Length: 82
Image (cartoon, rainbow, N blue to C red; front, side, top):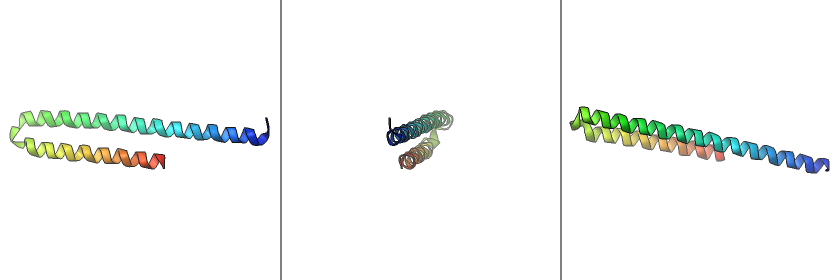
């Protein structure tokens, strides 16, 4: 195998490893974000039971926060795909 071919293959392998690492990182961030949103929604439900009059405000806060988390994950994904 020529040196040029070997270098080309090594470069391709490194590129694939970098792509795999980026995919795993994005997956981990997305999983963590989903867990945080689930916890947020559980907390919202608990607080709504304790104070039904605040349900609308709590929903607004929870939904705004969930959307913010989603935007941050999307931005992270955009930066990783680069």
